[in-house]
Image: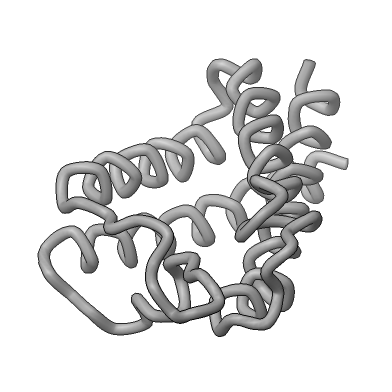
Length: 134
């Protein structure tokens, strides 16, 4: 069981590090893949314009989550991270998540194909880690 827990922790740390790196790239002005990761309306307009400070804060949170994944401290944060990503997987009922209404945009397709399953994995793995380490 410990080997499984360690494997999940390493995988999650790598996932969060990658996501943090992508957000850092966007925070310093990178444009690659932005059309795929920002929700859009049917007419193609963005639902919001992410700012550099907000994007940097998300990057910092993701790097912190990578640390939490392997630090074996504050196991209650496994629960918190699981809940946050569970809420992201459920979504806003319009543009994001399992129950979104707008599914045909580029973001909508990417969300259904990649982002929601990733959020469900993160939710499930963190809930697993929370219950197995307490």
